[in-house]
Figure 1 (cartoon, one colour):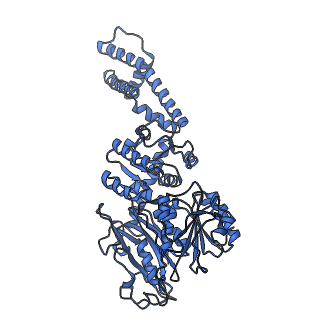
Figure 2 (spheres, one colour; figure 1 turned 120 degrees about the vertical axis):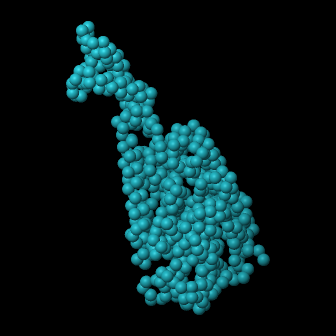
Figure 3 (cartoon, rainbow, N blue to C red; figure 1 turned 90 degrees about the vertical axis):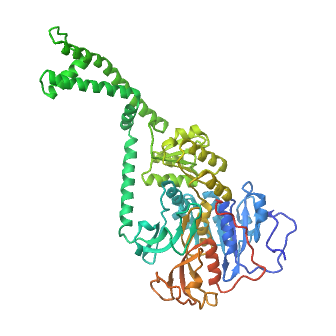
Length: 602
């Protein structure tokens, strides 16, 4: 039987045949507004979710000019798709927002999302609203306008993963729960007694294993402030501060002039002349039997002002006098030229917004959109010198780049000359975050051509394409912004407790809490039945009324209704566990599924 909720895509108010239900649908209703990959990942999570054993009813609202690929829309099953000219009260009423459980506003327009939320509030005042926001500074003021609002930034969630990849570090994921602070670390960086569970085996770059039974080198550990983790963190912090001081020192005009003076041919010639004068000064001190200071005085006076000829001098003295006079003739214009060149270069650097001297060890960030701006700011906070590239003269992050004193090059990063202008040949990493897959790949390959061992962090839209590129060209890491952020958006919409999202390569693990319901499949079983190898790992267990959870639960511990489980799981594993912990399964023939986008789609 055809799915009764597979509607033909139509505009609000458009007449035409459609399938009507004979009675009101009892399934919880959610409305999602948006058009990009984050929407598809959130829809996938909603279609796999249940509330009290019932699957969800979902309506997708899309604005004109922002439609996803038509083929992808045709593949959507179990989702009512409506095109609308604008998100206003009439649109939300036509979408059935009255009585809905939640609304997700996932467009990349902060002002548009706020306006849509205000219109939705007029239709359904008590509605749960989840809003995608870039400017998190608006959060405090906007929250006062809505009784039940969650504001999330996918850029803020994904940026730490890109920063960690650029620096070759573990993504700085940490969270606090029940008096304990847990963080992601390498097993070698923490004490064995602080390890809570293994997360992944990443030693084989061609075969990543998530949640293995043993031998995980990436672990979830408790931050106790004890060595060796504290010592490593302190050392990295000191190194970052030193890099930060060095980076600011290098940006001073005087410093730039000195660097320019020392690296130019004219500067080397000046140094050679000064060395000759120093040698002759030493010879003078030995020949005239005077102190070193007197010799310096005689040498400088002879070099800079010349000296009266003395035919009665010995031949060696006359030769040194002539050589010093010639050196003086060369030294004065050389010093003048070097100082002028250094000052001019420093002024050009301030005017053009970039240094003319040699950069080394910096990170090049391509694309100052939502994610690129966050990555740039976090790298700057860590004391890393950043050079940004964007095609647009005034990208979203331009104002912040100028405020932080970060070099911004306006140009096409797919061109080799643009990358050379950013000194890619001597940078530590190239982070490519624009929304153009072709340009991103070109920038990555050109960067590798300039520096063969360059660390590249690449963002690609198509997941299968990204995996093949990573294998064929040895691109270090490519990550999916929407895949990392979607679990938090879905959980916020469903009022579920997803505590943290942990990026691992191109995958994501979630830390969540699940309550065992009475009559569920887990009621009356043991903790071993709540785990699933490679998919779900139980890290804490608490019973009703228990103040502190048991952080070292045994596989044979009994489970009962009301028990709370904290787990680390893959998204598919969390869906399985929620189904096992719920009271009833979905009615036969009513469950709708969305073809899950690959992990790499963003």
